[in-house]
Image (cartoon, rainbow, N blue to C red; front, top):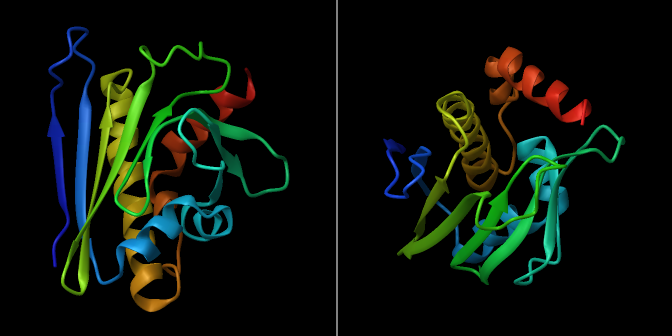
Length: 177
């Protein structure tokens, strides 16, 4: 099975870039949903805990697993349709909570017999530089998620470490806020 990354330019008037990535996973829609919304599972394959009650209008945080409690990404749940679709805003802490200005991520879970197609669409990415980080980040995270669900274990090395210099610069920017 193959993964399908695509870089798409947005239709929105401010011309911020969009990113879409699809992967096929031997799993159930319910297990994919749980892997996206369970803080302990996200910590295991993402290196951050995604924390929320996942109800529309609720906040969510992408918290570091180092015990610091620091959230590197925050947002609002815009849509929650277990186990098929989750849409969240995706922003740096300290930015205006204006939903109309925030980056938006949608997870679509489509069952097909014994597999699931998981499509992640990240819209309104702030810049081309952020698009590059998003492309590297999403492919790393989703590869680790797929491996976890199919084998019961994460990859032996954190795939995002391949992009550590860019990630570290982004985390340092979050710490200074």
